[in-house]
Image (cartoon, rainbow, N blue to C red; front, side):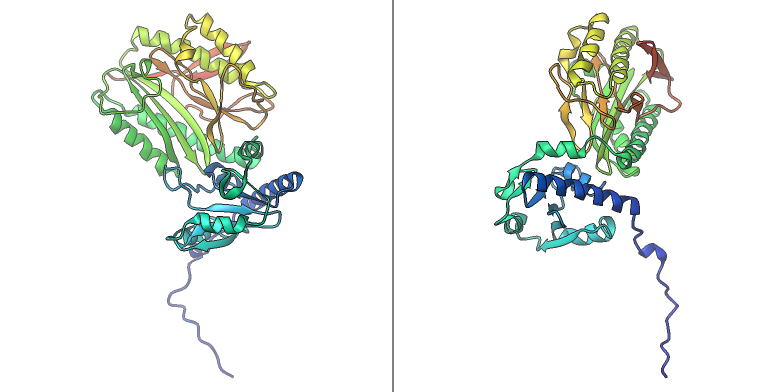
Amino acid sequence: MSTMEIDRSNPVSSSEFAAVDLQRVAEISVRHRQISNFLQSENYGAILLQKPENLSWLTAGSDCQRGLGPATSAAIFVTPDSRVVVCSNVATAQLFETDLAGFGFQLKERPWYEPRDVLLGDLCRGRRVASDTGAAGTTDVSLRLTGLRLPYVDFDVEQVRHAGRVVAHAVEATARGLVAGRHENEVAGELAHRILKYGGQPVRLQVLMDGRGQRFRHWGHDDSAMFKTCTLLAVARIRGRHVAAARTVSLGPVPEAFKADFEKMSLILATGMFFSQEEWELYEVWNRVRRIYEKAGAEDEWRAADQACIAEYAFEEISLAPTSQYRLSTGVPVFWHPSVGTALGGETVLVTSKGPELLTPATDWPQLSIAVKGAEVLVPGILELPG
């Protein structure tokens, strides 16, 4: 009887085996069933997903975008019984060895030099197919898919709480290091580094030094140097979900004019956060916010820039406007970013049955206590640093 000898000189490390996240496996199955129910109710044979937000939602958190651009590394073709990843040979290993291993996805691969559209056309031919783009002769149902992504379920809430802490920490840590003479581009780079360090992707960075935001409400950053005040705002995507926060610092005592603008903005921010309540339509929330603009003597400021949006797998797909009829419900994240004159704020809250939950809490940061309908709402104040 022969005996096989085992070479133990180079044992396989347990780290070489990908651990399957069973909670994520279960969540993907639930989301597949939701799609199956939709297909059957609307008499579609399949749905083709290509938009980043829908790919991230179905995979329960994969970031399918290639960097910060709109391009995705794959498409997913879903039938009631299967979910097929369509990608090039370049993306296969990364997707199935690091991100989707063990999650029940099948593969349709093409060489990188062949257009993905050819393979997608073959999959869709002869079927009644829905999609989120209208490609390959499919029916665009992208608006219906928002109702699948929202409201967040418990799995999403756990993930977005983590994302909120990461973004708040990145903004605060960067802001605490500000000194006179630093350039906006340099500060933006440091902020981006901190977000990337914790697995996020910076989507929008604003570095508003010395009241720049009064003239340019959507200002990003350039090579201007800081002299007195600065507001940092970051929107980041972490595991497919978006979250955002802003913080403001002053080198030395806060200038009176800036302080006055900031106090008005804080009243508006607190009001928006407080009235982010379940079963409220956005225009109802807006009516409360607009009254505060008027009471603060800043009735024309709201016209200068947008005020808030739903921050989910898709960012700014649903924005606050005077006529918005989107109805808030438990599990919907709202990013508030009102501005008054030189001051800009920013916080992300989650609508819950017990009231809004702050997802971007301040840590060792001055806070303003604002009473709204008899309730205390805390918003970040201005951190004074040595001048």
